[in-house]
Amino acid sequence: MIEGFGTIGTLLFGFAFYYPLFMAYYWMIGALYYYHHYEKHQGNVDSPPQLPQMPPVSFLVPCHNDEKIVAETLEYLLLHQDYPDFEVIAINDGSKDRTGQVLDDLARRHPRLRVVHLAQNQGKALGLTTAALMTRNEFLICIDSDALLDPHAARWIMWHFLSSARVGAVTGNPRIRNRSTLLGRIQVGEFSSTAGLLKRAQRTYGRLFTMSGVVAAFRKSAVHEAGYWSPEMLTEDIDITWKLEIAKWDVRFEPRALCWILMPETLGGLWRQRLRWAMGGVQVILRRARQLRSWRERRMWPIFLEYVVSMAWAYTMMITFLLWALGKFVDLPAAVQVPTLLPGFSGVLIGMTCMCQVAIALMMDSRYEKGLFRYYFWMIWYPVIYWIINVFTTVVATPRVLLLRSGRRATWRSPDRGIHTT
Image 1 (cartoon, rainbow, N blue to C red):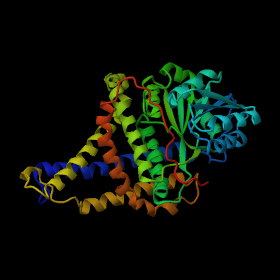
Image 2 (image 1 turned 180 degrees about the vertical axis):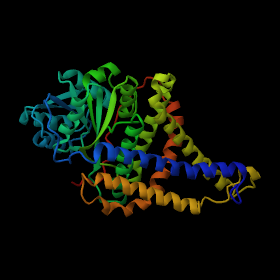
Image 3 (image 1 turned 45 degrees about the horizontal axis):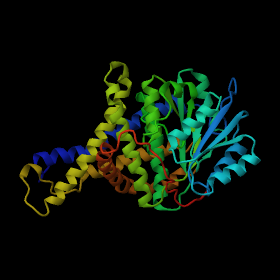
Image 4 (image 1 turned 90 degrees about the vertical axis):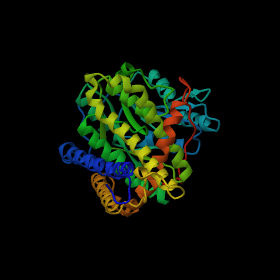
């Protein structure tokens, strides 16, 4: 028992501070194995593999109130993508600004661009499904309307599809464009140590929890078998990942398929984004839990269990904090006393482990983006800012998902994209 803590307080405090420590080493080991086994000896971003064939590709770009940014995204895609046979389908999802006019102007200048106008905001999932049904091409690459896709990304993605007929989807490697604030700089390291490192580890251990919605490629026949994107899900990327994997399609991560994106740089924007992510994760867990009872779905069990335990960790952190705060005003029973939130040596160990995880992640991604380590020491703030946000968003997300009206369509609004810098 920790000195001064009650029995229950000791258990809560121990789980709250040692669970992240265990998971950090679990992810680092898996990611390092992936890196040395699959990635280290392959080519760099600018030297994509020679493909035996070049089947046509459709780029799908859903848009909503994006008049200020969508032209840059589409023109960069149309003019710089190093792939011979492709089309671009932009979906104007009931925008109230000049997005539709901007898209029509671009279409008149670029014959490879087709524009779909939806009269009302139907949500990203329905927009993607509409565009997928409009194209005859088997391979779809979906990017967000604020994303700049690396010129060689399509070749790296298609390398996976052509290597195996069971590859149903490939997710790319999102990189942060806006880095002028503390939140922006921290997210550079966060995306390496979560979006990058975790996906490498999850590929080692079995299945991905989610593709990155900002850059995700699909085999159309796989999406058709899985039932396309679900319009009522708040995070269509998590849901389609699980649908494909439950249908026994392979979902892969390609770290060289870079995509430069804009992220929130205000606490309010970050809160709204992470709350939607948390609600989407809870939604998928609740919906897919029954499908995982079969032994045939055993490879999905680790990511299911990890997410459920991480939800329990968030509630444990919240309960620990509440017991500590309550103990300042009333005398609590000895069993539930939490005299301090300062973790002492365990906190130093967790901090050192966090920085080690970030260093490993930046080392892996530095092959594809130079100068990443200049953001390393900004990551000292990561546990303070992002762990607190993750705890509160998880605690808030679960009851909100349980109260959602069944079958309600998940429409969208333009997110906070921070300060736009290239």
